[in-house]
Image (cartoon, rainbow, N blue to C red; front, top):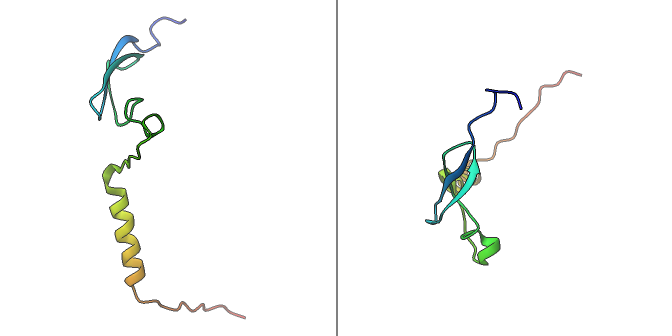
Length: 81
């Protein structure tokens, strides 16, 4: 390995999950924050969990509601023949 080009490696980096689980892994960052881990992932728990970051579902629903309530207009093209 070349000297002084690699990031510092933390063999006991602390990982904190949104569910409250805390464990250690090797990483180039000393601390990591995650939303889903093996303790709360739906595949392992069998329970359904919806992860909605930044209100994406609400934004989509409001966009669809605006689209369905807007009056339909007919576009005409001005093509030369």
